[in-house]
Image (tube, rainbow, N blue to C red):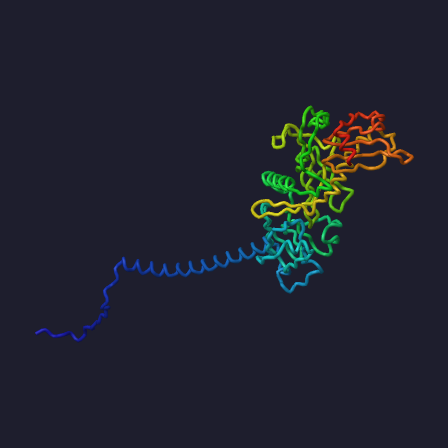
Length: 413
């Protein structure tokens, strides 16, 4: 029988009941621990990136607006009139917005009212079709980054003459900024308005007149023609489009400076423009026939030219009216302008008196002698000066003798 040796030592082994992890499981566990760390790092990085972008946007906006912390502070105290702005050279139908709020631009401009800017950057929009729209920025106080066009040289015609009283924003709604197509359309509309004028018959007439055989008229080449049979003539008014015929029109409130006025003259800063138009003769062989010729009002540079104020409006197309048309002054100027060749060609003759009459019927001029007695009498009709009496014929001027029909007209003036 075997017996146990009491000198043997017993050894106990404790082992886990959980199966030992395989090499693949050990790798997966290490990967999960690493992924958790990466997710935390990515979230922190994303948050920092968003914060950086936000800071960049804020600083970029601050830089673009040109606004400093002192300007953006609504408690900033502005210098007197640093936020005062006036409007000039706008259109009556124009619309404006300041910082998104609508305002009556024409009422503000025409009544010489001022806009008050908020502290800092202000956004201004002006729309007056068919002129180009204006979108700009203007700051209070002024910033070198402002984009609104300002009038920098003040004159007596401006709303203010002292820059310390504020700024003047130039709305640029002037006819010289129209596109060629729109300028052409405006000229056509103005011509139509001129053709429909109804002048007082005792001062002016646009109705056709009759030329009897022997009557004189001036053609387009300034040559004197004689009617061989009954003709008809009508005085027409049209907008000038010839740059060579431009009138040296004084600048508003600056008489010492002039600018060539071809079709439309510069307006006053808050007023209506002027139109330069010309009176010419058109000749017809029958009352309703097409004109076969046309000629100047007189053989004198700018004879028949005049400027008048017009009211221009836009409602999808041009609208033009005269405010008002000074017919008496225009009639007097037409006859007076035509007297220039008389004074130039006979300088030694003591001309006195003045031309009178209805220009479309004829301008009659009676010269007076030193003794004050009536002297030579001349008639201007259809562009031609004619000698009416013996005293006029004795002056040896290059004027033809008046026809019997022209003598009868002179007798009735």
